[in-house]
Amino acid sequence: MARKKQYIEEEVIEKAMGLFWRNGYEATSVRMLEKEMGINQFSIYASFKNKQGVFLESVKYYKTQINTIKEKLRTSNNGVIGLKQYFYDFIEFSSEGNLRKGCLVTNTVNEIKEDVEPIVMDELKKFANEIRDLFVSNLKQDDKKENALIEKQADFLMNTILGLSIASKVFHKNQLENIIEVTFTNL
Image (cartoon, rainbow, N blue to C red; front, side, top):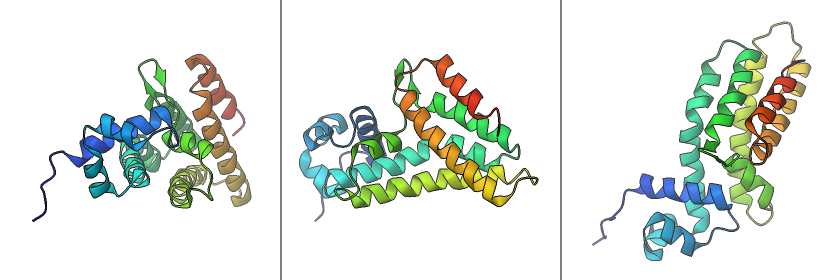
């Protein structure tokens, strides 16, 4: 007879996500997850198989959390104005009081190697491409732009949002706003 879980999976994954977001994937150990999630190692392995499994579930949860601002961008019909708002919304999303955490996905991409964690990296790439696709669809709202230019601008915006994610961990809010304003000056 299977044992009944003594915890709510979404709650423990939310805690794990916060730990990965603060400390990074590599620096987070199963022992740290055990303490943060409030469940024992046996339960972690039984429910998620390993640290990678917990992380992949954390990324899924992260996607649900960022979905609010992604959905605003998905339904935006303001083109570049909607994109600019997404960048401002991202700055707010990635902050927790005075703690600036950047982006869980960007932080993890910066620390792991694809050949060591190919499954994790594949999931992170899917997430980044999803955002890029939203950038493309919003840029296409300007019917004066050629597709080749739209693709280049989407790549530029991806580079900017990744850089903004890292910058958000060290720069002040007004500096981040300066980056956003300059980014959208010539778009």
